[in-house]
Length: 179
Image 1 (cartoon, one colour):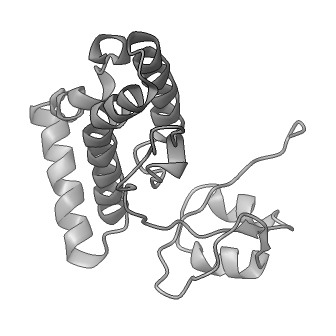
Image 2 (spheres, one colour):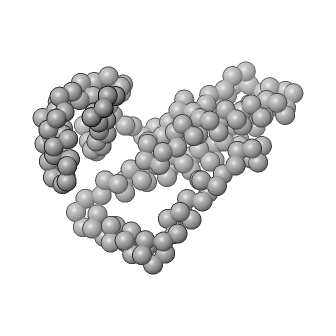
């Protein structure tokens, strides 16, 4: 991206989107109309947009089986997640580390792969569920949004570390110690 350019990521919930894939063209006018109520410099930024790419974000369950004794899935192939907790790439890196450690520690590959899935599935499931909850919370409307924002302001003021502590299970995780 050159100097003076911006990458704008705009998220809107839609019950009608069906197409999976990353290469769908969008309409700049639709983007501007959808986000017309944003304040500050956003209207000017959107006014300069001449190309839009759109793609759907989908909730998919964590796979029930990640391995077959000979090969294993890692990352989104095993546990696709929404981007609302910023952990997709992190989970893939953790998967790779733990998969390698399991293969290194266990001479029988089927047992190593089963251990890998047993170690990773609970954490990845919890992360996917947290991302789904954040997606819901980020897209609240009307009175629910006002109540949620008031609650967040109160927590921030009276218990400033509460939100960080709430996700200690996520950010304090040590994959090296997990194996």
